[in-house]
Image 1 (spheres, rainbow, N blue to C red):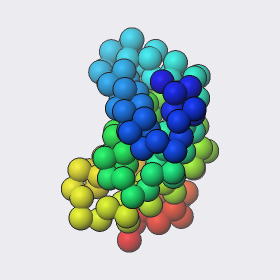
Image 2 (cartoon, rainbow, N blue to C red):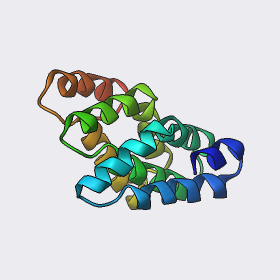
Image 3 (cartoon, rainbow, N blue to C red):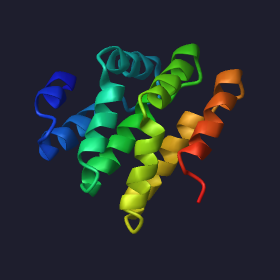
Image 4 (cartoon, rainbow, N blue to C red):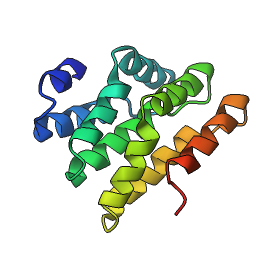
Length: 143
C-alpha cells in the first residue's frame, strides 16, 4: 500500500484508497490491531499519509480518510502507541491536519476526523504527551 502511494503520489484516487486501506487494516482494539498499526509505521505509512494530505489538500475525501488512518495508527496507550504519536507529529501531521480543517471548514466529516486525530496525537500524561500539546497549538489547532 505504502509503495503504491509513493509510486502514484500525484494520483488522488490512489492516495485516497491507500489511506482507506491503511485505515481499515489498522482498525480495531485488540493486540493484533496494535501490531498492524506498528507494521504500518515500520513500512513508512505515517510520512506517506502526511504526503498524501499535503499533495491533495483540495480533496476532502482524501483528507477525511487520511485523518481517519492517522487516528487508527496513533491509537494505543502502550509504549509503541506513544512512539507512533511522536512519529506522526515529527512527520508533519499536525500542520497538515490543521490545513485540512481550514480547507474544508464546512465539511463535518473532515472536521470530525481531524479533531479525533489531533486528540490522539496530543494524548498522554507522560513527558512526550505534554511535549506534543504545544506543537498542536503552534500548528494553529485552537482558533
